[in-house]
Image 1 (spheres, rainbow, N blue to C red):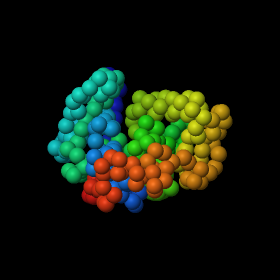
Image 2: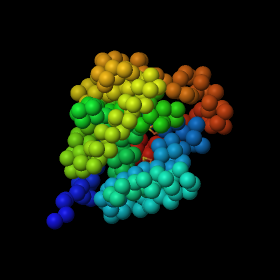
Image 3: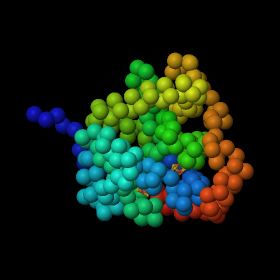
Image 4: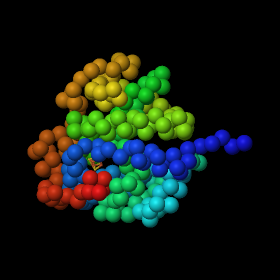
Length: 250
Ligand code: SF4
Ligand code: SF4
């Protein structure tokens, strides 16, 4: 008998439980002027949303917002080719058409993923480091809402129970981050599931040290207001309010 996997109705239930705003600032207004007017995480040139096939089935039964992603270069082809049998790459119509209730788990979580320690314990949230130079939130983690953290942790606790492969993927991603950050002598910032901010210093074997968001580095154009203004000008963007990120516009 085939073992039961996570099903479309599980995602329906996850969507109703996991709905909090990541922050009460419209972070899309910060990153969009540097990205042709579109929030970085809502354009497939930057981030290709990957969903479980069961999640995609649910979405297709609820909306026409999502369609299959078609890779258009060697890098995106490789990303799609490397997906496991349960996953698929998708694309939405864009931020102007966002539907709050039909955002994927990936949309709701970005730029964060669940951080698991060496023993596999789910400690809290850290971020997808490839986006350090593009996602404003990564340089401003003090704005992340407690309710969001609680809902994301609860959602992933359920996902891990229903889908052990997802747990393995996040465990291996966390281990990879420890390797990469240790090599680069960078701290890993963690928003703890029970509250508070922590850092993992290079060479500290994964030990958590309590800190404040002021201890976290700021990156690229988000290093300072002057750097930001300069970068927006160089990108030909406008400093006035950019299009709202979908989930805050809804
Ligand atoms: S989460 Fe990051 S990339 Fe997405 S809209 Fe906010 S600042 Fe931009
Ligand atoms: S948040 Fe909305 S606009 Fe952005 S990728 Fe998700 S569904 Fe599309």
